Image 1 (cartoon, rainbow, N blue to C red):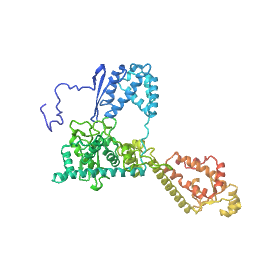
Image 2 (cartoon, helix red, strand yellow):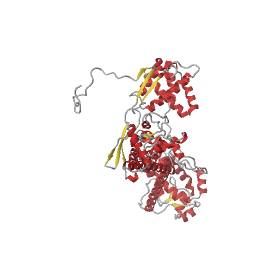
Image 3 (cartoon, one colour):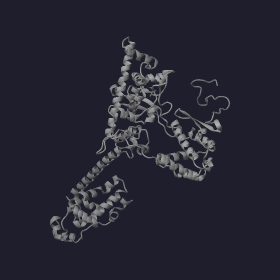
Image 4 (cartoon, helix red, strand yellow):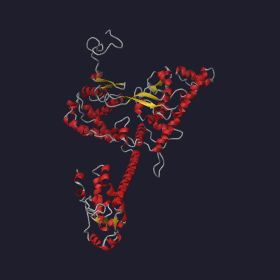
Length: 622
């Protein structure tokens, strides 16, 4: 092993390996009481230890240890501490349930379908059906791995497979436009106060260094240099803690400052809370216009974890309105705590340690470094404890209640608004998820997107109807003027007067001799061509020779039903192209001229239309 440095490897020159065989330690180790311990090293850099001795039923320990090691290993599906710990808690619930049975299965080979059904019923009562199905699904995934699957009886595996949930429920609905605007305004106001508070403290430190300032400036300068916040020895037990926190907040972020910062960052970056907690402090500034950051986007499996994003910085006075500007502001606000605790995370804060003794520098720490659920980011408490609490929209006839603030709802709201901004085009709107995930977990079922979709669809239908009506009118004007609609009795005298027919044509029309598929034709020899008409009967509705009487209403209503059924089996674009003009003509030029009573009477006598397939050209039916 003598080659070193750049250029020591290349084509034909593999990297130097240590002599002999390298056998890394496996995840399984022997523990106390004959149990096996599984050591977990996640892709997120976090570690954990799963000791089988903490579970009941020793006959399961060896098989479960192998299964847990396989599920949490490099090729397993659980590669973060959060997901692995969730599996371990679920396994604990499962084993405690089995141990509490009158005759518990001493090993995996004695598991039965009745045990699975009993666990499902218990969890349904305790936590609801959705959680129960999820727990059974997690147990199925664990018992399906090679280390244990051969030991589980087939009937138990079948019971687990039957209960495996096939789909996930949609995520939480987002906020209305008013709620979202109030939430962002509140977060911006609180972040601005945090920024101004620390800026004022930094100004006092600067003045002290320049030889000015007062006693408070000297205290803050000492805090800035050492990182230690003085303990109030003259304060009583009840006011010591708030006074110390207030002093520390002149220079450092406190845990209670995190909610507005993270709410605003979630809304501007359109990323979920999990990704924000993993944000690194390392970044690049591109030409002073944007900041480049590498995010951790957690996914199943070891791939596609990292994503490089570029966030706009904008001008200094717009830092609370751009993702890059807010990121750099948070980076600046947490700089002192980060330097003191030596973390590479963006979010670093100060916490009060009640125990006196030790080094108070340890009060600076990254709250999400050890576990993502660490720290006290209590969004609901922040929203309710503000001077002006955040309220949800008041229901009709009721009073407004507190606004429930969660990262999931903020993320859903940003996804909805981006999709709406891009006109509903899912390929363009899918930013951090696939189109399927975007629709299933964020858009589907959200009241804001549903209302917007109804509005867009309504506008599109109105546009399509108006376009079809204009096409009908253009063709009708070119073919002879207007339809002949007779609303009175269909006798020869009325037809002669209102439809302008000669006596012989009026008699024939009254007797039904001129009827076509749904209307009547006053002159088969088209006046514009001089030849016998060979057009489709659907084209009659755009011809000046078309004659409609009260007797034709039932057939026309049957045709409208047939057109509605055809609409369900073909695309909207094709339907409007093929049937839209005829439908618009019937609705606006014919049915609108008859009274509601006449239409209701005709509705009772309408036939089941079977002519639509016969009058179309054969190639239109392929």
